[in-house]
Length: 193
Image (cartoon, rainbow, N blue to C red; front, side, top):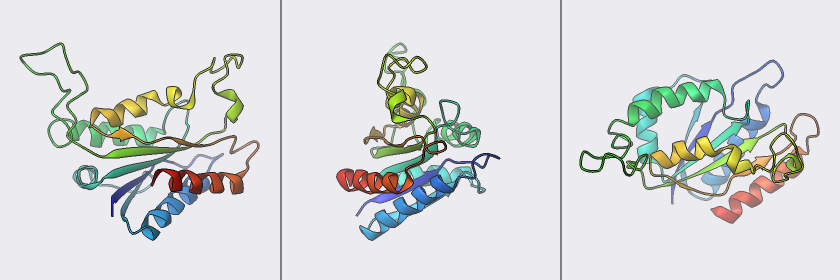
């Protein structure tokens, strides 16, 4: 049995109420509970306590982060969460600062993490799958999904978490294929848990 901390990073926008991210969060919660795992959930739309969030990270074997791709990153509410929770936890609870020491001030930057678990990102995007990994596509110029999400990967790595493969639901606003996304999501979880 694992301890799974799920974070729903969506926030409501006039053009996107967050139903898909909420549904994927619920599907992940149900999946993990059906497998006998213990689950805790935080949703960016709700209030949270910084100290309780730090305790959830320390408690978890796996952090599951559900998020929309928002201006090539995460929502501002999750960025606020990073500023509040990650910054507070960085000074001893989740990491030993930035990992450098007095004896080696130029080495090991970002490697002070105290956590020993894993993380998985599940992302909803308006971009079609074809926009990624293709140098002929002018906007991303061949970037992969994970290269675009590199800042989030580095945030989790900062605290010592190891990545599991990212799930991506593509083209969710203009050309949605939600039922297929749900099937792929379940298969993704089955493959990695």
